[in-house]
Length: 190
Image (cartoon, rainbow, N blue to C red; front, side, top):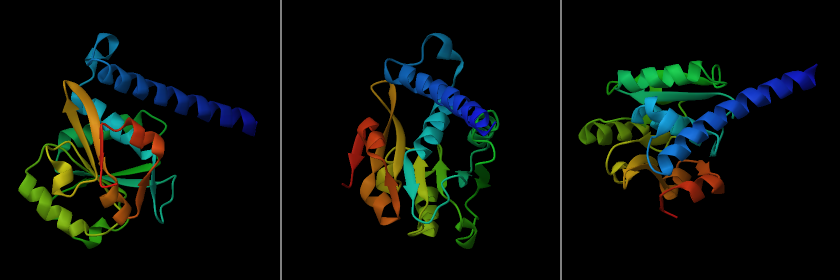
């Protein structure tokens, strides 16, 4: 009985992973085509980030429960909410809408903060509140790594890619598995 439950959970997880990998592969190998044309870029970015979590390790974190904050973007928050609710991630990710008025104390317990299409000045100010907490800072903003981010989802030659600052991540107690680093378009801070 336990074996059947484990097998069912594995198949659900495997199916979700295959759908995400298919979408990411489609984008990586020449843009969105065919059956993936219905996906918006922001949906694929969210799927990429959620998959990235499985290749990331935090110091002092429960690998089965994460708190993910979306910074001042209701549309992207809705996409995260929809994807999480319809996948095997439901119950393992606590999704929170974060705004610039969030206090430093309120950030305790967060694992991921995602910044989408926002004002760089506001982001730099907010990143100061994060300090050296073990929070993965990800975003799709130009020069996000230079602003203090750790993972930047960007478009290179018409294809979605991501860059990682392993130095900044390591300073904050976050490590990425080597498989993820090999897939990154750019790795800095090593």
